[in-house]
Amino acid sequence: MVSSAVYRYFPSRDDLLTALIVDGYNALGAAAEDADAACRRDDEAGRWLAACRAVRDWALAHPHEYSLVYGSPVPGYQAAEQTVGPATRVAAVLGKIISDAQASGVLDPPALCPPPPDSFAPDAERLRESILAGVPDDVAARAVAAWAGVFGLVSFELFGQFENVVTDRGALFDHAARCLGRVIGIPA
Figure 1 (tube, one colour):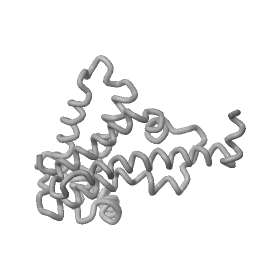
Figure 2 (tube, rainbow, N blue to C red):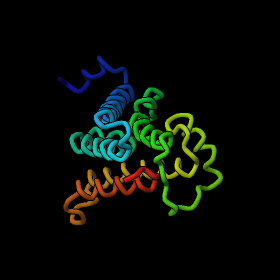
Figure 3 (spheres, rainbow, N blue to C red):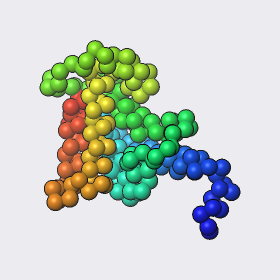
């Protein structure tokens, strides 16, 4: 197939990119959802680790797709509205785990972080309305940091930042994911 033939199926480069991005986000979201669904509902720590591992495993198995959605932005591409829902699937899984821990009374954030800035309160409210039901502002702020930490670990590994630094990357990832869960207050 010649490269120009792709435009029989997609009107523009941006339409093709949008389709690829939506597909990548949906595949990654499905991996996290499946991992969470395979765990007992009352095992928040197990669910957290399983979902985090699913993100890493999917990224390592699909490095180009991961790079498309979490790597450097494509010059000139403006994300279409239809990417938003698929892009939130992993966050929704992680948020549900945190919300479930809060609702069941097992969420126990350690007293190691200062309170979030007052300016974060509207963000926390939006997060409660979408993916972190019933979670206080400080836990919402920790959840955002942990979410970024999980994806940062994956990106460091995938993009070579751990070369000659970390030998057993899987073990370090599991340790870091558990630590990030504890920072939020997910029981060990």
